Length: 268
Image 1 (cartoon, rainbow, N blue to C red):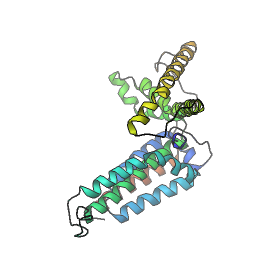
Image 2: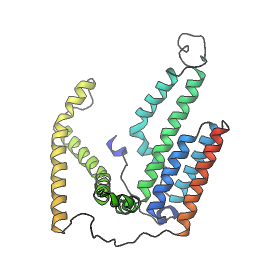
Image 3: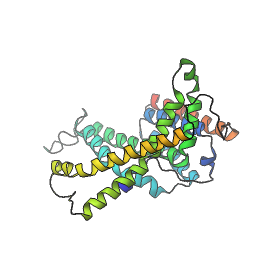
Image 4: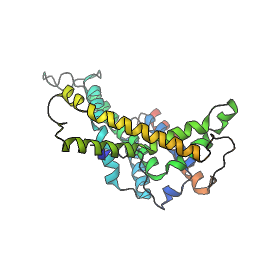
């Protein structure tokens, strides 16, 4: 299960999606999320899924990696679908006692909600898969730069976000190594109930926190040795510049969002 968590990983490549300005990709993802929440019916969700599939094809990110990243959230998707299935008011599916509490509206809501969560996660995964953490930091720093006039620590905030994203795969790998070492010493993480399994994870959490704090201390020491003093006066090796393709991508997703709003008003 831990190996299925791919959040924070970056797949290097030279595709049209990889070459887009990271600021443009962030704006496109934001517009995609807005359009996704505006989707209401089958046509809208089919269009959103088609757009995502086209983006994945252009990025050349393996669909296996996209689907593998969804495995840890299947329980959340299933729980959300079940809650909407049984607690949405409407017309019952059948008069049978088992199906009496399931409504037609609940079935539609459960299906669309599950599809929305899956498309949302895959869309955000595609951003991290095709954008390096350094590029994401520079993009967020540029997009949030107007807040610097309000003395908001934009650079420090974006740096913390990028470091947290960068070290997710590292911590997952460290957790997997600790679990393997504990299993080799006879630890049992699979038998028993939920409470027993949670207690069995305590020997894993202690060395994991120790390793995380040690890595954080080493990173802070390395940054101090390199005379890091925050974002004031810093320059970038690669200056971000919008190209024609970036404008086309943003305009396309803006049109998609407008189309979703129109389709929602039409009841589609």
